Length: 441
Image (cartoon, rainbow, N blue to C red):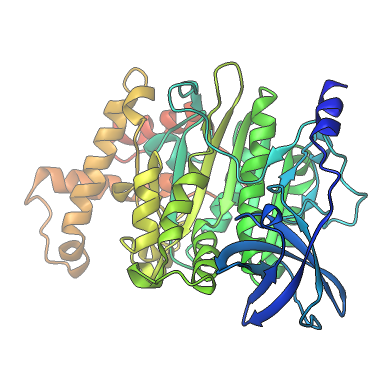
């Protein structure tokens, strides 16, 4: 009741209107009262098809520069624009579980309209205060052997999955969505292919996974503002469940497409292109978005974030990948060469790291991981000579040991998409391989 009273008191009875004064490419110029035209505020503009929602992305003199969330075909000079000076908010609810929605929280699954919760959350929410948020929680079972062993995660941690196109990152995300130990899963599919969105929900999540999931999707044909808002809504929904004390797993595919959407917005608004054509606002938006994941304020739950990064031309040092890697708590690198050998998930163990790994290993687990990494590293250094037949067996004891272990370790690192392995099972199998000098447990 108090929330309702607060909302009634905050209502502004004024209706502010403006008018369209020009259109330039993707941009709409609107004049109106200054109180209704703030950066990030919105307006409904009359078009031949009805109304189009636009957002203020900049200013030109006394005119607001707006970008539309949908086509503005049929708009004319002087068309009325009903201004909404408030920053966009949404009211999530537990009734959203099991639903597939767009960036405006409209259902895409053919179901009824989504129920609204009692509390409004801003789409562009702020991360919790650095010194007021909790510490990382206990180790989290991801159900994927290579991740449980070599890049372990704690509740509230954030990891990036860096991969080129067609290397299998979406399949690995599906394994995490199905097998990871979490109360609620919030999945953001930003800029995905249209056919993959439905396949992900129906084939990957399935009825059981869908019951505890909320899927937010905007496909590649959606306007840039809608794609960026899908990412913002993903974190907003995750924050709602975090505040209810839930341990949330937030999966976003992909951060690169969010950056591309922000670049499109920035260029249209007149920002100068800088690093490889990306505008400065891209590198300001990324930390604001990604820092929203993590442990919540004391007394709440956590958001464990796994974000994919589609590296441009398999260049893992391109600007977006480099920026994201510096923000997150670790990175998982997927290799095209490994995928071409037929081993999935195609994770390059030697280039992947979790910054909390030393804190979570128990008993002799760290020793097992160190020995396995050393063996894989020795084999990688000598791989070309081994393949060419230029290495003579017996020349080096450590290399001979690495060759003997390579087959079983490669089998251990591979895993079927419908297979799940717990943390204890993962380390027991690895101990059997290393202790048996190539034998399996």
